[in-house]
Image (tube, rainbow, N blue to C red; front, side, top):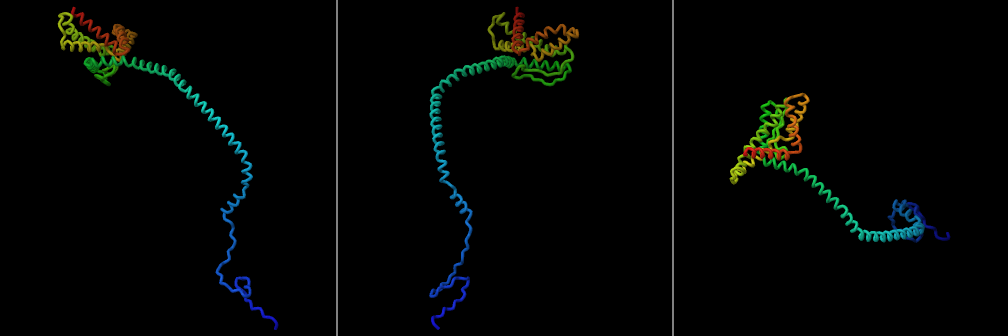
Length: 298
């Protein structure tokens, strides 16, 4: 037979291509790798890179340049106007502030002065009345005690008794409204009679050494003067006491009550005198008792 025979080729596993003649077989342990789809990141990056950035940049360049120029012009104008406004404000701000102070300060000062004057006008009479009550606290306590005693003896219900406080009125008795005018007159004006008598008794000896005997005053004289003035200053009732009596007397006149007819005019005079606080009643009581004590010496 002519020529050599081809070697016998056996089927290779895994359908690998036949090995060329004369080649050495090398053991292979690698496994075939299948093609995997791209990941989400790769897909996003590919889409992002595929956008027409160059075309968009070319279209946006003129707009951005024009906007930058406009912003620069506006900013420059704002700075210029702001500087001018700042200079104007700096120049005229002091003047405006001074004018505002000149126009506002007198009104504020006048308002404060008017408020202080109104407060002082309202507080000054109350301050004087409180001083009078504080100076004559023995008379306040005695008058309240007499009112309480008479109201209690008359069988009236007593709601509250204040013997002394630093206020106007300084002492009072809250009691049931008396059914008769005579009882109301007794509660209101019997303490007035008692305090007037005590004031004259204290003032007469105090005035005697100087007016009659021409003797120098001693500490007893000053105590007598203090008690006499205190009793005289609180002899008249307060408006809270004299007002109801005057109203009851006025109603009694309509009913032809003889006591009311006799008492209505004095009750109205005392009510008007005591309507504005305790200063006028105190001055009237002191003048009346002083005159009466001096008249007894002549």
